[in-house]
Length: 331
Length: 268
Image (cartoon, rainbow over all chains, first blue to last red; front, side, top):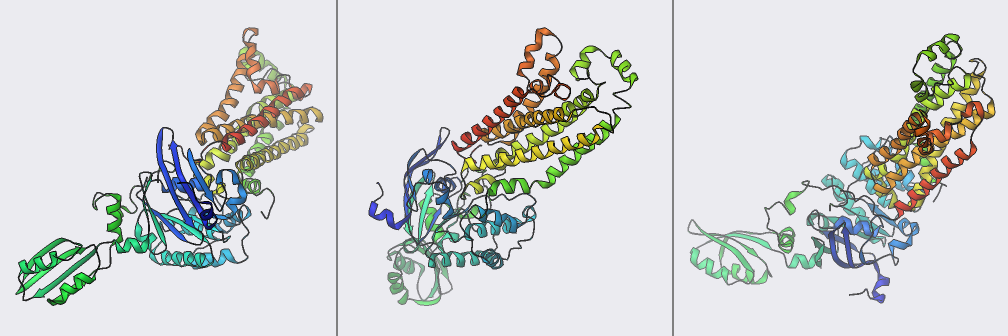
């Protein structure tokens, strides 16, 4: 489906039928998606799915074999340095070596990117708790990541392309990062970020694309993922037999994984709910509940179902910090 | 862009420690070897020692002129230790400029900014050139300073010509390293290619000088192009200088073309 020209003007990024091969190995098999200007768009997928490859194509670090890319209205392959000045990029694996302080390194990147407002670098560094006067090679992974974020945000680019931005950050700094993303959005900037776990993306993103084995499985809003997501329900009720309770619950649409155990003079019951809450509540209201837990929807679980992988095979939300393949052929 | 040549500035300024280190090494070599000339190279005993060595070895080491001031300076400084130090420095810089930077993962971030790949190669090659010129200028100045006290008897214009050839020979190895790094994205290949040009040039010269049957090897030796006619004694062969500098310039241009035409950071 070619990008609609009317649409193109309102889109910060349009990717159409993107194919990328490394040698004979095809790693992207025709990826298409669009990102509205001023939105926050997340792409999630397991390591090796092709997230980093898509992002590198947007920056013209690697070149597609087929398909069209439009970034801020231009083809990154031919637009040249002027386009990249309007983008802030955080690579998936950040290597900062050399005997140079963070401040001097950022000043160098400011020289080869868009103009940076005075005081902007210090303000960002202070928010993230980064010491700019230390040599970069002595920084911890988390602090290098902060330096990478300052580098991406400092010139207030129209588009931010952030590959695994929260990797290595502690939870407090992750929250600060989310605030920075929201501010960027309020400022009219577009944010494209990736992660291999949904929980990092869901708080920031309006829309999420799920990428697996070089294909987009789905593009959905976080809200619609949430609607389709599975909740866990547990309750105990008095004055009812296990068989009756089981029969009652089995009649509720979307109930699965139903387990009923006798407990005292009543029952203990756990199940998953994949649909609306209201029908369940109507049934529950007829019972003498002694306890009730209705959990928040677990997006991770619903996404894993879309991946087509089962939790526990080490290929989903449980492998944070696990295998991270080397650049390029990796994510 | 707030400053001109930002990549050149960073490559040049951030390596000042390394540049200073090589300068110290070259200066030390000059101060150790050259003042010894009157008591070693210029002494009658030296000629006797030389006569006792096999002539093949004398030729391989370029010691055939060692009893003259220019020959001694050529054999010790321009032809041996200086050649070795400068080649190592330039090969290291050339291999690091693109291949090393890519391999360490840092080139990707630089290229994501408002620069072209050609600009990256040209500015970094310029930084390498300036460092080579500074070091060779230091060599020139120090030898000039020692010429009288060490009785070297080198004419200034010949010293200048030899220095230009010395710098060109160094840049040929450095730009070969740059080129191999730009083609492959690997520092190791850059180091191997740059060092290969230096070492093979030296070996072809040493072997080629042995007899008329193998003197065609001299045509393949940049070392022989530069030093074949004893520039310190006889003046520079400027055509050879043109080849050294010309090929270096072509290699830099090819490096820019190679880097512009490929994916970055995708080797296995």
